[in-house]
Length: 392
Image (cartoon, rainbow, N blue to C red; front, side, top):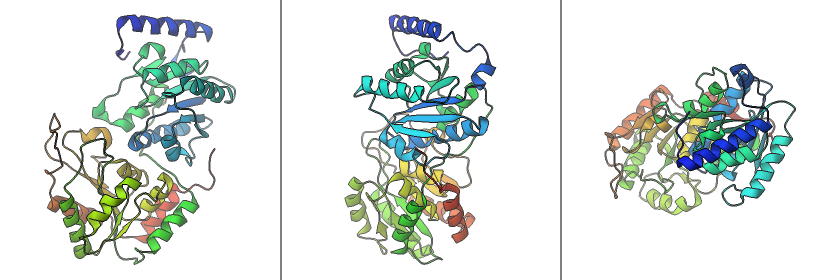
């Protein structure tokens, strides 16, 4: 069992609660076959980082592949819902009250979701990023169900898991399905969108990047602000200029509304200022836009994870203080992760100065050589992630 993060007296309280709850629902699952027979899943997805939500999407696909008749409901934050609202692997995605602001109302909402599932055994799941003790209590109070996943209160869970960053977040989330007895293989994250999202993105591109032979390169030049993973602005300007002049690339900038002004400042001195869609996209329209481009050059941010989730090749400029194994596709031929030698502590003024313009340009050129501009590949990415109907 994973080690609890709490004091011994709290652990004893948790154990007492767990024993009482197990008694009420007739004990813990007695065998792996009993776990593998569960068909109803309530997933608690309340983390806010975009990348964390996207790295959990393989779990839904794995469960549906392993248990085709599975019913998957997600109790979600608004961020999680924006990622999952069109997923064909999720039967219901419901934004509930925030468990960290209104716990009682969230409990009532979770109970309602659990009670309206199809007949049969039920399971409450917490993915990586949702291991908060409050969510463990929410999983208990939601109703009679097996509890599986990542938690700081393992005493309350039937199958508590410990995360190993060296294996990566995707493998860690897939371990939830494996803990239930399903030997699922690794699979890539996936974000879906509608035909309307595709048309919206196509209109943006038609206004600027209509030439069929020019590489459409998306640039993510601003970080989320929560971590030190910025690259020098002058280097971004140089590599964008070089790609525009050398390869005829059309630069497309994306980001949040607060990124719009810094992006415009960066664009001012470029030979081709490109187009900025900062603050104009939802997660779905962003995914549809990325699917219709050819390459992304990005900081290690949520937008890169969206690009990966639609199969767009890319160059990632990553910080030296974070292991790339946890978040990034270091072993895929579709991606090039650039970073300096690992460091243990983050200097107060840290910037990714150890990655050069030449490295980024070379990596972009190499990937465009492997995955050249191809309208057919753009179309294939669109088809792969477009849903015909929206799950509610």
